[in-house]
Length: 374
Ligand SMILES: Cc1cc2nc3c(=O)[nH]c(=O)nc-3n(C[C@H](O)[C@H](O)[C@H](O)COP(=O)(O)OP(=O)(O)OC[C@H]3O[C@@H](n4cnc5c(N)ncnc54)[C@H](O)[C@@H]3O)c2cc1C
Image (cartoon, rainbow, N blue to C red; front, side, top):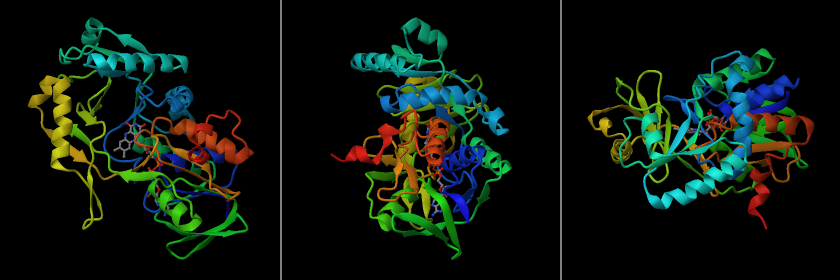
């Protein structure tokens, strides 16, 4: 028995467990495999980026900007947070007007951003191709170590009394008269739910809502690809890099390698039961990187991975809400490939909502399930 039962040991489950435990809640977190074994773990680091982000998520990024620099002190564990600044590169004239509109939106939402002209840009990034004309610069953007941070959240929650159980998959949810009463694990154990159940198990949320509550979500899964170059000396990039029209994101990693990603995908291998990379996707991602940093033409891919399932929602932002018709059930999913950066903000607001019965700031309202209904 626990007052608050959380399903899923990714950044959302672990962050919410810590936030609830901080408020004095009795928390039990159930994770099917291991902490940070899903989208919140794996190769490299994750971008903590506001630049180019959906306008509905910018207020969350403003809050997350305040949290990230001191999060390691709060949880007593390294987060690997490094504020490198993000450059959204622009090559084509037709991308300038939309970039200026996004720039206006970001500044209006309290995200300091500015346009960087050709000369300054090439001073900031001397190895950049001459074809790149300008960029939107967000100095407060950076990167963080997702695996370390997620594990740090779990450990911090445990220090405050939360119980974290790995290798414990939830298979069934019991309800009576619109209230969740218990969960059943794959060991057949029945765990009563005292006050609330919080489903933060990413792709599993979609299945469980459909199968056990009859609630469909406009969400699908995909396998984002990330890859590492060999060690590079000198390191060709100095900032976190995105691109207005190319499918490309780049980060310099403390190992002296570049992490390349941005939207290329793996495929599911039915036999192995896991995601794997596809040669054309690896080659395509590298080609995009070489197009903007020509010196990378000499570089080989040292490692590529596409084993971490992520959920994507039809309008590109998550769904965070009460389970429809269930008084004491909450869920969050559909992070759409950019759920990492805003996780500290969302978990804080979600815990406040669950604990007090109200999300006072209203920052989670744009992510309600009701937005899909008339
Ligand atoms: C390769 C990749 C790169 C990314 N890059 C960025 C980036 O640069 N910037 C950014 O902002 N975001 C990025 N994201 C998105 C971000 O990492 C995710 O949105 C975020 O980590 C999702 O966290 P989560 O806790 O919801 O999910 P997960 O980390 O997937 O956690 C869900 C957990 O639930 C568990 N679970 C599933 N079923 C059950 C069950 N029945 N019972 C118990 N537990 C269960 C799983 O084992 C898993 O550990 C990236 C994602 C990927 C995959």
